[in-house]
Structure formats: structure tokens, C-alpha cells
Image 1 (cartoon, helix red, strand yellow):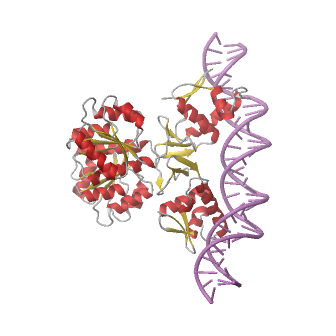
Image 2 (tube, protein in one colour):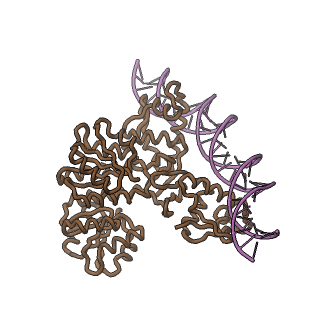
Image 3 (cartoon, protein in one colour):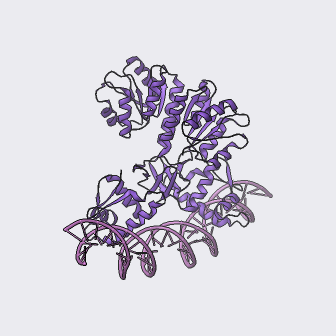
Length: 221
Length: 221
DNA sequence: TTAACACTTACAGTTGTTGTAAGGTTGGTA
DNA sequence: TACCAACCTTACAACAACTGTAAGTGTTAA
């Protein structure tokens, strides 16, 4: 069941939206308390957020920005009038789509469907700053390019991405590769790092991995 | 340099769009010949397509659909009036955003920026209906799951996806795998199909490939 | 200058991918 | 029901990719 969270202070409008969405088969939750909206939404973990920009406590734009920073899903912004400034502002803050009130039922549902489709089929890639990594198949993406990492390359890079931008010790990497940090084969690890760097060179990402002498490795950014 | 391709038959409008985009720092290319637009765009490999739906030769919607099937995106659709039906139709065909003409300069640029940002980190996956395929690494995605196909498996599935839902003949597949349809090794192809199906079973996608006796294979949907 | 640390390259064992071969199953037709 | 062509499955060996080992060459900081 697809979950949608509505953030709208006008109770009449809110009821109408809930009604439309529920009849369309969505599981709808509305925010009633406008303190700390971002935390509430994060807890609800909806598949889509319907966000009015005119709110009592906090600007909808602020909320939009915070949600995007937390990597929370598609956001459809609602605004009362066709304010161009509002629209531009919202888009720049990372809103995924924009709709003016009062809104046509079919248009609303079409926009929502479109957003959900866009995000649903998307794999859950891990953000590495200037690239993304599929943690499952170790497919590496940069812009529209993609390439495959071998199992060892992928496991090392994944560890680095997950700890970014902190240092990952050799013993940690050793544990990841061979399940133990007891008897580290320093050289084997080294060879695998060389191989990873060589592969990353294909996407001009070689200098992303930084060596911290005596400590380990880390990803820039 | 970000490349944008404009598909617009009204030369006045086209010039204006080109001017706006060039002044904004984009590398702009316009389609002049409206035969086989999709192939032209594929060759240009733009970072974004600005597509008018009212075209002489072929419907903009058809082009939109074909582009999406080829994994080319993002697509910003232009339409003359605020036709709700056009908008809904476009969104359902996978357009990524929608704008009415005549369009405000700032709004156009904001929409484009937004689309580019959205797609920047994103890999260009090809939509296979209930799954997506990275045409480069042959990584297969379904929901949040992903797995890797071998080279042969990937090439077969890619061909099927690109022709969906039409039938792909054995000789076509043979040409894709071995560069020739002259001396088809029916059995070798068959074995590769069995292997692909077996792999797809892991994501419950096995029955996606349908056998058309005497003709070839096709993807459902 | 030196010793510890970091990096590179080549080689061989292992694993995964692919075409071949041989036999089984299915579906339309008489 | 019996037949045949089309389709499917499995096992095997040749081939390519990945990985650890070994034996070196650079680099850094005291």
C-alpha cells in the first residue's frame, strides 16, 4: 500500500485531499501538529509527501529543504496561487513537482502517479558525493556512465562510502573482505586497493580515495 | 557543457528557445528534419530534450514514448495551451515535466535546472515495465532489488525491452549475440534464453518472456 | 639516511561464462 | 491418438575474469 503524507493547515482543503487520495486507493496520513514537521514525516516514512508551502509555524520551503537533505522521497508542493516566485523557489529547493490550488482531481492524481513511478522503479543507490553505488551488484554510476566493480572492489568502495568522509582502517577493510581482522594480509589488501583505484580511473574518480598514512583510507567529500 | 535538444516545428518559437537556452549557457541543438526524430536524438545524446507535442510528422507523444523506451531522458514537454488532457497523457507516457506555451523565461530555465539536477546522479535505466535495466552494465532492477546479468543475458533482455511489446525474431537475437543471422545456431540461442529465464526467476520475472512459436520472443506489457 | 609504510606488476589457482552436444517436452495437425 | 517440428533442459569442457601470492619499487617522516 502506497503511503502519502499530507502537510496542509487548512482543514477543509486537507479533508478534501485526503478524500481524493483515499478513494484513489492510497494510505493517507495528515500532519495535524505543525511543530517539528520534518521529524514527524521521517517517522511516518511515506512514499510521497504532499506539501503546502503556506504553513503557520514553519515555511513549507524550509520543510522541503530539510526533507530533501534527509533524502526523503518525492515531494509535491502545493501553493495557493500561481505565484511564479513560489514555484521557482520550490524547484530550486529540490521539490520534485509543483501544483497550484485549487487543483483538479485528475491532474493531482496524475502528478502523484508520475512522481511515484519515477521514484519507485529507482534502485536504492548509495550516494558517494560525485558518484553513486548500487550496494547489491556493485554497479557504479557517475552521470550517465556506469561500470561494474568486482566483488572485492565493490566491498571496499561500499565501506568507504558508508563511512564517508571518515577514515576506514585497514583492519576494518580486512574484516569486510576476509571476515577477520586477526591476521591481516596487508599486501593482499593493498593489491585490492590498487585494483579499485585503477577501475575508478575509468570514471576519473581515482583521486577520490585518499590514503591516510598509518590509519587507513577514506573517501573525499 | 550541458547539451539540450529542441524539438519544435514553429521556427519562431524554436529560435526564441534556442536564444534563451544559449544565453543561459547550454549547448543547444535543434531538430530541423522531422523524419525519424527519435534516431536523430539518440545520435545527439543530449542531457535533456525539450519536446513540443504538436509536430507535423509524428506525434510528440509517440516520440516521448520511444525516447523513454530507449532510456533517453529527461524530457520536458511543451504544449500550446493548458490542455489538461495533453498534460495527463504526457505524464502517463513518462514525460518528466510539463510546461505550457508561451512560457516564461525564468520558469523554463528553472524547470530545466530542476530536471537536470534530478537526473544528474541518476543512471539512465531503460524501463521494462515491471523492471529496469542498465543497458551498460546489464544490472537489473526490480523495486529495491537488483542483480547482475551476464553479457549474453543482458544483450538478449535489452533487445527484448527495446522492442517491447513487439516480437523479436531469433535471427535478430542471433545478430545481436554473434553479429550474424546467417548461420544461426538455434540451440546456442535457446540455451542462452533458458539461462536468462533462470536468472530472471530470482526476481519473479520469469514469465515476462513469452515464446511466440515460429516467430521469436517478446516481453509482456 | 633509514626504516616503516605504501604502491605496482606478474603469475597461477579458482570461479564464472559460454558454446556444444545430447536428449526431453510441448503443441498443432491429421 | 500418433506424429513431427519447435522448443526446452541439463551436463560438460574451453575460455575469460577475479583473486591471493610473491617479489619487487616508491614515498614519507624522523
